[in-house]
Image (tube, rainbow, N blue to C red; front, top):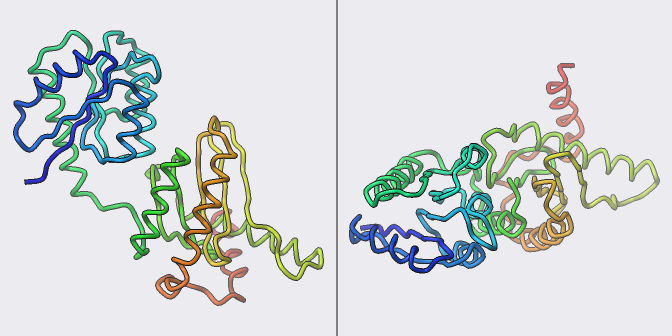
Length: 287
């Protein structure tokens, strides 16, 4: 029997305890824990994987929606149920955008909350039948480093690609992202930087990173070991310095892990890299 951990988040301890006791009727394979603030919940979620998080909307430190957004970055497969006594169209619209898995307006019955939580559990079971995130044979320890990087930076997605533009691993929300195109363009950008360095009579390229700043999202890319590149896509409201710090740290830790893995991927000879990227870009531009 696989235990299902449920975290109940409410700044009113009596309410949280009442919900926990009411939901115990779901069965012995459930474990219920309580957090009395959004920040306390975040600490728990970073340390423990929860199947479902039930959160109140109106809390002093983080709103339920802000907590749901953080959960989507830290633990994308965790189901989130939002409870609110201040339901508005804007809240419902934002909850839908964040893919909140359950929504309840107060007052509600015990039967309703049990049904919503059970539905969220069922959604988790269905998700397990879908393919896992792509990691193309990447070593588990290296893959975990990418997950940690996403968690620490709060990035929408983290990609590991080869210097020739071949996607190796994807973490986070990439369902609406053309990963192949992003990988090709990032690799082409680094290749262009190397060409610039050679034009300036530099024997060794001094370009280690690139940064794109957009209205909604920023993209930070970092050279791991001249064979792999880290690509971090994050919200424009996030602090770039935090992303840069943790990305560089992750690159240093990943570099020795990736030394023995280059043969697993579809490497091109170094002299063919420019031709490969040029062909990919021509395809993308319709040339």
